[in-house]
Image 1: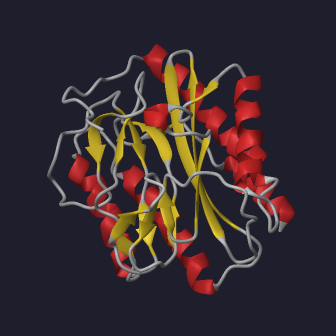
Image 2 (image 1 turned 180 degrees about the horizontal axis):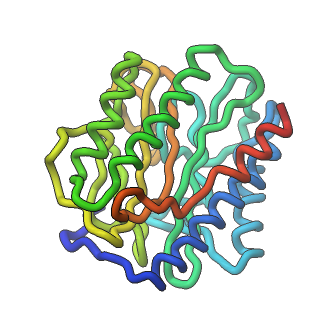
Image 3 (image 1 turned 135 degrees about the horizontal axis):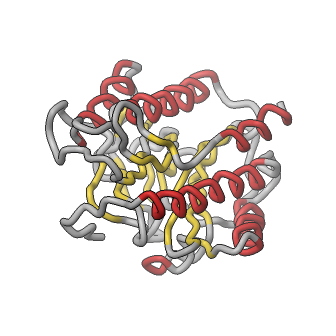
Length: 264
């Protein structure tokens, strides 16, 4: 989907409205996290998320977007993104990337977290850890005066140092009154390249990192993107505002991880 060329810098008031939408995504994912366990279906998780979002005065940001049928994108194992919730029970050792969007006060929030289901293999646990580190390193580059390429370069360097594949065809993006705004934010690139970052730009930064090769394909359902080699993929996403010195992270994983740590 075309993002348009103009980058829309947000006012302080708009940023605070976006913070509300983004934090609601984190709270929704925390509600879902309680139920992420073997035997639960992604359709059950989807129903919980939609009810929680609507109960909090928002609407699901993804449902109906481009024809997508559900509230959550639930991508299991080799699915990278855009997985459609279904009635197949999650299995011990699975991972599920859950991407969620909200629309409240005319602004979107958009965040994702990859969950372990039961006990996963050590190399999969490492993939999730490294992908989350990629997100942190990418956000460190999202400051005034840097360029989009600095964000992608930081992510790519870290992931590839572990031998993981960095998906090229899917990218992060600007965020605001539209779910996908300019600029595109790739997870690979060269330092010093791309649009210059300015104060007030809101970006959804979302590393999508594969245990194996970087190549992907579209599943027969027309939505789900899967790894070509059928190896596991991980995905974490935050909404941030570009600032001087340090980015302001609008979304949060704190409540999600509080739930995860309780259930361990």
